[in-house]
Length: 498
Image 1 (cartoon, helix red, strand yellow):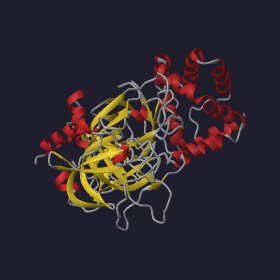
Image 2 (tube, helix red, strand yellow; image 1 turned 30 degrees about the vertical axis):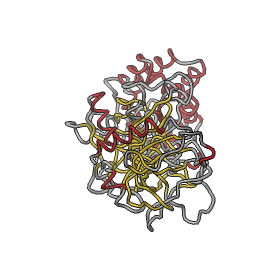
Image 3 (cartoon, helix red, strand yellow; image 1 turned 180 degrees about the vertical axis):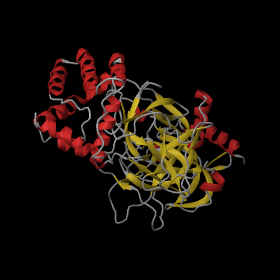
Image 4 (cartoon, helix red, strand yellow; image 1 turned 60 degrees about the vertical axis):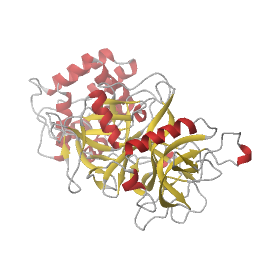
C-alpha cells in the first residue's frame, strides 16, 4: 500500500472514530505490546481512557480492524498509560515533570538551537528557538530561526504577533547584549498557526552570530521525512528522537505514530483547529524513577526541533498532552509539511542550515555593529556602580529600560535621532574601549563632537519621554564628561571625579 492510500484510509477511519466518545486522535503507527513494537502497521487510536464494553453505548465500540488494517487503541488518560519503551544506554530519557523555574534562560552567544526566546508582543510567554534555516538562493550566512507561532503570541489579551513587525528576543526582551541595547535578535517574517502548521520564521538581525546546531545534540545534518513502513515498524522500540527545549532541556523518546488527526486551539481565534498530520512522541524512561510523571516536553519547549539519531530534523514540537498521566505524550508536526507550507503560502523556500562539525559559526552579513560581549558589559556595569555620576548613567538604563527600548523601536523620530546621532556607534566604541586600554573615543561621531551628539540624542528622547524618564535623562546627561579622545580608564576616572 502506498503512503497516499494509507493516509487516505487513516482519514476515513478518523472521520468515523473521532465521532465516538473519548476518542481524541487517530494516526498510523506500530502496534505495541508491553511497550515494544510488534512490527505490525496499524491505525493508532488514542482515547482519553479505555472503557469496558459495558460502559459504551451501542455502536461506540472500536473495531479490531478497519478496512483490513488493524486498530491499536492507546489510552492517554491517567488510568492506563502508554508504556515507555526500553532505551539503550547513552540515549537521554524523558524528564520528570518539574517546576517552570528549572528553565534554561542562558543567553547563548553565538545563538544556537534550543535557546529560550520571547516576543515583544504584550503578554507573551516564552518558547524555544528550535533550529536555524537559510533561504534558497541567499547567502548561507543569513540565518533564520524556526519556532512555533503560538510561542510568540500573547497568553491573553488582543496584542498579536505581526509579520515583518514583531521583534523577537533571546533569552527574553531585556538586557543589553545586542547593538540596540536589548536582547532582540530578529523579526518574524513568515508563519501562522492554522490547520497546516504552527510555525514562525524569524529573520536574524545583521551582524548576529549563530551556529547550525542544537544544544547538547550538536551540528544538524539535514532533515528526514518519517516513513510508516521503513521507519516506524522496522525498529522494535520505535523511531528514536531527541529534543532540547528551554523548559525540560535534553530529552529522548520515540515516535509512536504519524499523520495523527487531533484537535488543538488557535490562540488568536480561540477556536478549535483539527490538524491532520501530527506526530505522537512517547518519552524514554527516567533511570530510577518508579512513580513520578515523566514527559518528553512541557509548556515552554514549544518550537523545539525533533532530531533523530542521525542528527536530522524530523519535526517541530507544538504541544504536550493536557492531562497528567504517568507518561505525558508530545505532539509534533513533520518538518516536510512545515517546509512545504512556507513555500506554498508565502513563497519562502527554506533549507535547514547544516554543518559538518560543531563550532561552524556563521554571521548574518550586512553593515552593522557586532553584538557586545557579556564580559564587557559586566565590567562596564561594575565600573559605573563605583561612582555617583556612573550610577546615574547605570540607573537610567536599569530603571527605564523598557521605555527606552520602546522609544527607539516604535517612535520614528527617536529611532532616526538615535541612529543619525551615532548612538549605536558610540555604544559599540565604548564596549571596545573596555577591552582595549589604548582605544579612545574619537573626536567626531557622524561629523560632530560626541558630546554634541549625546546632547542631540538627549533632546529627542526628552521630548517623547515620560516625566520619570525625563528626570533620569537630565540627571544622566548632567553627569557626562566630554568623552572625546578619552580611553575607557580616563572616562571612568572623570566620572569618579564627578
